[in-house]
Image (tube, rainbow, N blue to C red; front, side, top):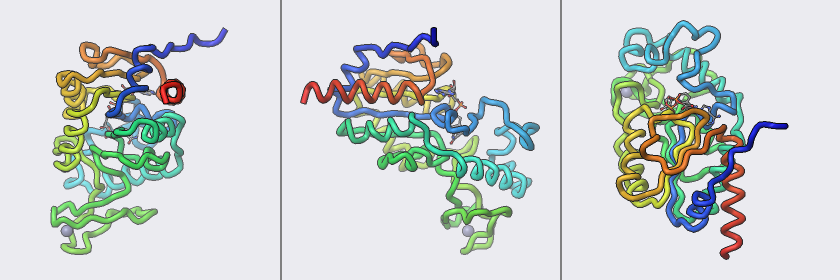
Length: 255
Ligand code: NAD
Ligand code: ZN
C-alpha cells in the first residue's frame, strides 16, 4: 500500500472552477522540491554556522559586504542549477485557467517566471537583481558569476542584492498591488509559507476579513488555522498539479 492520498475537497475545487479572481501567495516551501532550501531548514555546508537573520540584514552587509555577498552568490548558484518543479508549473497553468489570477510570491528565486507565470508580484525582490546600497536609485542585473560585490556605476558605493532584508519594508508598489489583488479576490491560496512573516501573513487575514475563501497547502500546520477554510496537508509539487487538473476538468464541464 502506498501513502494515503490527500483528498481534494469538492468545495475547494468547485469554488476554483467558478471563481473569476483568485490570488495565490507562495513561500519558500513551493521551491523546496526544486532543491532550494527554506530558511527554516538548516543551512548546509559552508553556511551551516550562520543563521539567515545574521546575513540578510543591512547591518550585516554594512559590516561585512564580502561575506554577505558570498552567501548570495552561493544561493544564486543553487537556484541557477535548479529547475521549476510541478508546483511552479501548475501555478503557471492556473494563470491561463482563471481569468483574474494573481500570483504573489515571497520567493526571490525567479522560479515562477521560469515556469511560465507572467503576472508575478515579487514581494521580497529577486536574487538576480542589484541595487545601490547608498540608495542613489541605481539598479542592475547581477553579472554572473560575480564573486565580489560590484560598485555602483553612478556613485561608487557597494551594490547590494535587490531583495528585501529582515527589518526592511516591502517595496510600496508590490505592497499596493498585492493588497489590491487580495481585496478583490474570491479565493486566496496560501502555499508553502509558514505565514509567520508579516506583512505577507497579514494578507491572508485581510482576504479572510474581506470575505474571501482561504485555502492552505503546506506539509506542516501553520499559523493560519483560524483563517483557512481548507487545509491540504502535503507537498505543493504533488497537490497543485492535481488541483489544477481537477479545476480544469470542472471548468470544461461548465463551458
Ligand atoms: P519559511 O522557510 O518560513 O517556510 C517554508 C514553509 O514551507 C513551511 O511552512 C514548510 O512547512 C513549508 N514547506 C516546506 N516544503 C514544502 C513543500 N514541499 N510543499 C508545501 N509546503 C512546504 O518560508 P517563508 O514563509 O517563505 O519565509 C521565509 C522568507 O525567506 C521568505 O519571505 C523568502 O523571502 C525567503 N526565502 C526565499 C527562498 C526562495 O526564494 N526559494 C528560500 C528561502 C527563504
Ligand atoms: Zn549609487
